[in-house]
Length: 121
Image (tube, rainbow, N blue to C red; front, side, top):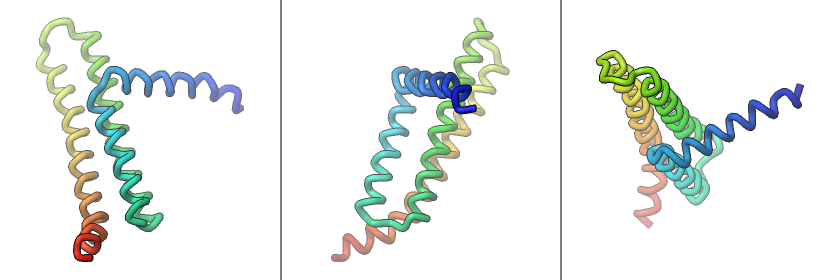
């Protein structure tokens, strides 16, 4: 069973490499996620809060990858401007935006009490 998973894992890693090399927003989201995790460890947030932060950040990265995949697919099949393709791309971008806004709000809810206590020292 495990040996069948290896090719799929290889393709997943290749997809991550493509996203990292070709998508600036993907790199921004990954770097932001690393910074959030480092800040969480520095501020000694609880494991539950860390899990919530990582889930929110992970969801942003997932939506970014799906957005990129949809854009690539649309670009392959629409050689000329098509309003339906534009709508699909806009909706995919909106998904990333909504995920990012909620992740930011979650980050504020979790980090603000820690930062307020840190600043008042």
